[in-house]
Each structure stands twice: as C-alpha cells, then as structure tokens.
Image (cartoon, rainbow, N blue to C red):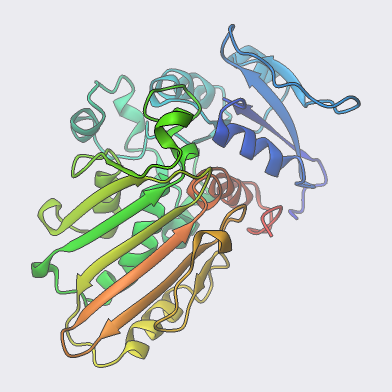
Length: 340
C-alpha cells in the first residue's frame, strides 16, 4: 500500500464491456481505491445483479462530474474514437488517465491513420503518452499523466521477443513469425457476425493477416522492422486467453540454457512474467483469470531454431490486469496489489 491514508478514487468509463467489467471486478478487491463508474452512453443497459448486490456509484463521464467526485485517475475501457474524444478534457482537469484502447499506443498520427484507417484528432497527446508495459517502462509509468495500456497480442509478443532482441541473439535476417490465437472476448462486446456463437463454436479462423492493427505496437517496442516480422491472428472458440507460437532463428547461441539465462536476467525483478524450463510450455489454463504472461521455448542448436510459446489472459495481462498494474505504479501502491 502507499503511504497516503486516503483511499484513491478511480473512475471507469466503458465498464459494461469485457475489459471494463474485468477492471471493475479487480478494483473492487483493491484495498486502496474506491470505484466510480463513469457513464458515457445514454443507451447502455445495466447488467442484472443478484438481490443485495449493489454496483459502485454511477455518474456521467463528464469533466464536471469527475471533478465533483474528486477522481484521481480514470480508466478508459472504450473504443479508440471515444478515448480520443474523452482523454484531452480529463487530462486538462488534472486527472490522470489509463487508456485501454489503441488510441495513444503509437507515436505519430501518420502511423495511427495507416493502421487504424482513420484520422487521429488529438495527435498532440501521442508524444505525451507512456506505453504501459511495466516490464519495459516501469519508471516512466510512475510519473505519467497518460498511459497507453498495451494491446493483448503485443504484450505477449514483446515480452517473448525483446529480451532476445536486446541480447542480439536473434538472426533478424531470417525473419520472425508470430502465430497468435485469442479467445472471443479479445474482439470486444460489440456484436458482430464473426464473433456470434454460431460462427465461433466448433470453429477456428484466421483474421487480420499481416495488416492487424497490433503489428506496429510490436515493431515500435521491440525495435523490429516491418519486413522482419510476420503476424497472423486466429480466433479460438473459447472465452478468454491468448497463446502465441513464435518462430525465429538465433545466432551465437550454443545451448537452450543460454536463452533461459537471458530471460531470467531480464525478468528477475518483474513478478508477472513466469518462465518454463527449456522444452516445457504454458497453456491457456495456466494463465486464465491471472495477470501473468508465461513463456516457454524449445531450442535446436544444430539449426539455431527457437520456438517460443507465450501465453496470457487477454482480459488480464492483456488488458484490465495490466491496467491495474499500471495504476498501482502510478498511485504508489505495491505493484502486485489486487493482482495475486
């Protein structure tokens, strides 16, 4: 806990979506915060609750209401266009923001427009936002006013790749392939034909091949060039979880324990990355309903091939859990508070 005896007030916009609802669930068990639900839609339908269970207070998602409630930090679990509209006013009022959309993850408006297929209307905030991956940017996150919470696919990919890239043991000339699969909640709660029950159940499909909007996040935070990285997303007929199988060639690596040592040194001070012995791999059940990213790999010395498996919960470390991890750093709580 932090040294401030006053409980911090945090607001959640988009609390009816999958990530927003998960966020509220985690925050309700956090001993250092009070939750206020910030309503930004007039047509939203409240979930039915059991008798005797009361939701947190609901107020409009306006700067005036946020100021009246003395909200210290606001989570935006909203589509990118909503976050772009809301964040500037909230920040100008002095309240800090953690945005779970892709609105502020990229560094320039031109790149955003290319991948999101629309113009960014608050480009001045792109340079001010801190990318909220604590394993890479922990100290910057502590003092940030605006956090761009990472995407679910890039979190698993970057945590698996960056230690090896920084150690310069990847043969980048051979390219890297990331074969990624996600549960249906990764697509959000808004209804669509692709995520309807009859389309998903007993099925397995690919989407966003090469042009998935999460690709530039991986490139930006790993240092890879676009020609070095191939990404393919797939929809699993399950509720939650991401598993990525990443294929690459190494150089100057003699044995599997060399790669393990790189990972162990890199994540020694980071509680939410768990490593497996060489030849052992995580599966989705090990990470669902947690804030962990689990990494395992196999290495063949003769061919210098490495295959890495990175798994996380797309609503946990891929969204709401990571957002709370960022909040803990920003508000001075223990980083693991409410997440273990």
